[in-house]
Image (cartoon, rainbow, N blue to C red; front, side):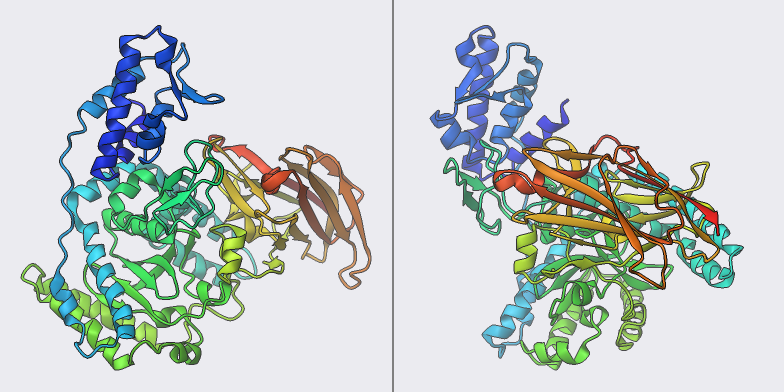
Length: 628
């Protein structure tokens, strides 16, 4: 049966009972009329101003989607079912709706006794800190539901992720062997052995990457189902009004992860809710991390590392706890971890600024917060269903964590590390939150083209969002995940856009930005070599008078940065030149601009590819070197 149709019918179940019943009855009427009169054109058309559409289908999540999934298409003023559309899909929808007398899911029973643990002398401000902790603590227990985990397991491509993990493991082995013969043999070998020692941690990297780029979708604002345009109000409201047709668009924020397995969209709360469920489903000890300054992510206990590892599914980032403070410039105060075992204050894992954080922790006294957290843990771990063995294990694990958190600042991060600004959400939304700067984003990454001999081969896949360096035979020597991680700098809120309607992905500037730019830097670090030839292949797409321009700057003398030449690149489909011969540094720049109307920002597209093209080579750079 059609997966999209099954998903839309599942969406119907998430509506309020009255709304769901109205939508299901309207859909049954449409199906029955067409199946009873298959050759009558009037039954194949549903006008957009028909009360059945405006009052029954549009208000229901999944209502209009069901019509599109059985073959209806949008015309000028109605939805129409083409004559060639198979009636089997209507019969399938009719059967699904007739079976929709499914039992209503029983809500999770709350333990109201937890709220009695809040000290009776607590102020209103203290209660605003304590209440969410209790709510999240109770919420994570939902992940332990066996039937929910079974549903989650069905949507995780476990075999594919295991294969990807083994591939990554093999590449790391090759990477270690490659550098063992180098001058830094001891250092590289030690680091390589550390990276490949535990495949279970590597599996998390693959799960994280798949979750961000193939499973879940970030939503800035809900979409009008009729006109396929985004409404203007924030999605924290359950309903927003479309600015074009006036229709109220429903977009509830779910705290139950089950409907999100079907919806697969939301903001950080929904992302981490489902990702933490996936981690628990796959047997990891995982916990839900609540940042009081408005962000959510996940931590997983690494058996190999004997510590909790930070994972942010929204950003596809692993083990970079200082990202929020250093990259996003967040003024942190309280960061609370909730798992099936306990609640813990883990703020100190995420900051180097202990003095500044302490000044902002004014909601309650430190002793009162500690006593409250300990009372929650004692109550939970003293329940009849909590084993003594598990309690002893959790206590030992907690001691290990306390020893780790005593080391402030965090010993695994240094001031020299790069921390990126937030990438999810629209440019204007991120800028309003202060989580990105208004100036250029400087990554300052340089590709050492002389590191691999006299030939350098770089490929980037927009579908996998992955750079890889290969040798002449095509063997992968190195991989870097994330397009921005391989750049020197970029500006204009450049981001990776995924259009699920058209099944394509590309890089573009953010909405409202006139011009966007990306720069890549290539250096010849070996003093005995310099550049001989430069070859570039890239894919671009423009609409409505938009513009994508490329240029390459060559620097011939590192001691004199003024000795350079800039060449415009008119055709990037297959550009090759030897005019840059003897250069020791290249800076490749692409600039996007132009377009028309409110969507001008997406009319200039870099590396546009179909999401189904997993073998794409959106960017190919080949550099040949020679001896001085």
